[in-house]
Amino acid sequence: LRLMPQRRHEPMSDDISVANVADRVWLRVEYQTLRRLPQSGVIVFTIRILRQKISSVADYPEALGELVRSLTDMPEDVRGYKDSTWRHAGLIKDWALSTGQLTNEALTKS
Image (cartoon, rainbow, N blue to C red; front, top):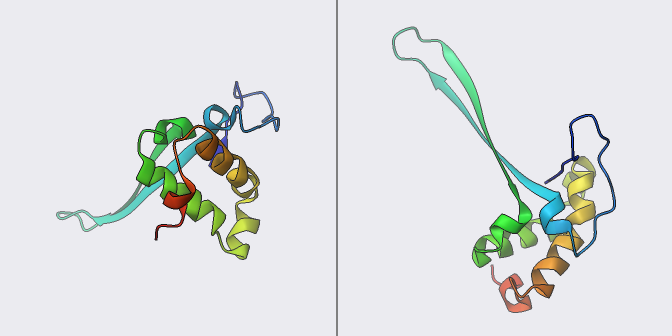
């Protein structure tokens, strides 16, 4: 998760609330691959980055549930590494529950 500044030169704001978390915090996913090119044998490392607002996951309740579960069940050592992600996990969960996009029952699914 990333908190995106309004403009590149502006510092990131920390005034995130349940009301605005879905539009202010972004989900970032990286697809990383290593490939050997067939003719040259050269190994190529690629990264494909996808970024979307948390609100874009609202139409996919199962994915939203998985996201909230993975954030709330994050191991302690990962929490330290992903500090900003961890700080917003509770707000994302509260937003999803308050908008009806997610139920407590959905959070208990494994």
